[in-house]
Length: 128
Image (tube, rainbow, N blue to C red; front, side, top):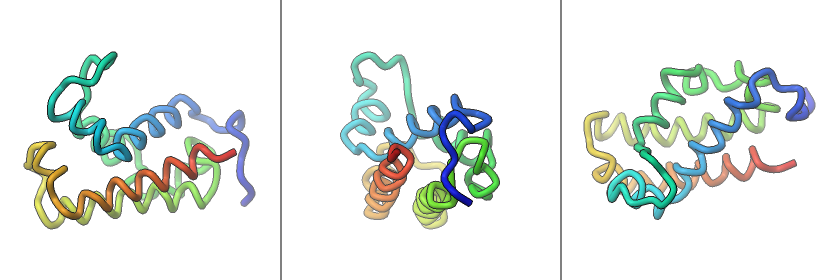
């Protein structure tokens, strides 16, 4: 399947939401400012939980990102990149559970994998 144009996606606003969440996941400084210190300028409120709910509960992206091609994602490369983010998150949650504070997650060695996978996914989703 070739890459779809953004105008061909069924839910482009959900794509923008995904990009916003990936942007937060890819920026450790932002995570500390917004999620831990609650001091990110121009932001009412944000926390890791919002991103997790979007990926795992509100959409089926965590379960099968490929199902979202044509809806939110343009192609299989984008789907794989989102699956890599989910896989990195799953490693953290499998090892440490889902009850830690945002700060505690950010301090785990494996969190760097989440940040790296999110940076990669963001680059792929933002490429023309």
